[in-house]
Amino acid sequence: MSELQSALDALAAEDLHAFTNGQTLERTASLVQLANRVAAELTRTVRHGELTQAAERDGLRTMRSWLIGHARLAPKDASMIVRSARRLEHVPAVAAGFAEGEVNAAQVDLVVGAVGPTELVRAAEQGVDLAAFDRDWATIAAGAPHDVLKVAVRAFEDALDPDGAEPDPTEGRRLSIAKHADGSVTGRFDLDAVGGEKVQAAIESIVQAARPQGDERTRAQQNADALVQLCDNQLAAGGLPLLRTVKPHVVVTIDLDDLVDPADGPGAADLGFGAVVSAARARYLACDGSISRIVMGPGGVPLDLGRDHRVVTPGLRKAVERRDGSCVFAGCEAPTHWCDVHHLVHWAHGGETSLENSALLCERHHTKVHHGFTVERDPGGRWRTHRPDGTEILLGPLLH
Image (cartoon, rainbow, N blue to C red):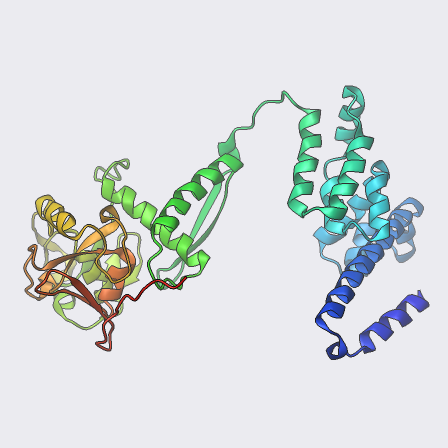
């Protein structure tokens, strides 16, 4: 051990700036192999410690508890080492690859997770040749990506239960949504393979259909925009189940004074699920929505409720769609069913709800127009887009 420590000290003393790129990569590969061999020796030693009850010397019952308490490992890491130590004897080819540094600890953990006591008994009863799988796993782990090894391990699990009952995919699905103080939302979901495929297919279709020129969004941003667009499409289609006797929709409550004030007005409007947004955001949502007038009396008591009416009639929308054909923002060709009808001069500021005062804009560019960008239709019928500084966005030839 002292020689190993000395060798590591020598490595740490080397000047990495003296290495070429090729030498750096060779050094990295060698260190990975060395780390694997050290991990294999740690696993072998932990198994010996279990068999000899070495942890009792320090007053502890198991090597897992010793690794957590004395080596300060996370419980999951200690459990992984102990499990690997106990089960490696059943996959000698993988164990040999581990000892030689060709297989890493994560690969070992994946393999041994499939060869527990129950699986070993079933393999023996059904005549499944574990040794053949072991040899294949060792070869794949040493030369193929991790996902390929996952498939090979799954093949063993399938061989043990080729006619087993198909699990109910809904039992493992989870979706959690957390709302924060500023109204923003974060969440995570867990889906089965088929459910995940459906979600990916739906999101990917929107991502690939909405790739305007100059799009600098990250892939994560594109996916998030596509998810919102997917929900927007469904809400607009009107086919979702009723929510408290009405069709589900985005509800915005704002005072008339804030709505007509051209200022951004942060924190001026309330959304149906409790978030608070700016007056500018409310005006954006009010461009193409239904409006209800509520007159409030003292103490916040509603005195009069006006009839709900659409700002943009179905007939007008059809005319705008026919004329514009897609989002009119320069470089974007989002389809009509993704778009809102934007008032060039907002109706709250006296703008008419008419064909001449309307433009189709997708959600992303509708937001841009309500935050400084402008679109206008010249006398020749061509749409032009300007930045907040007044310069026009011009589309040049595509670069190849």
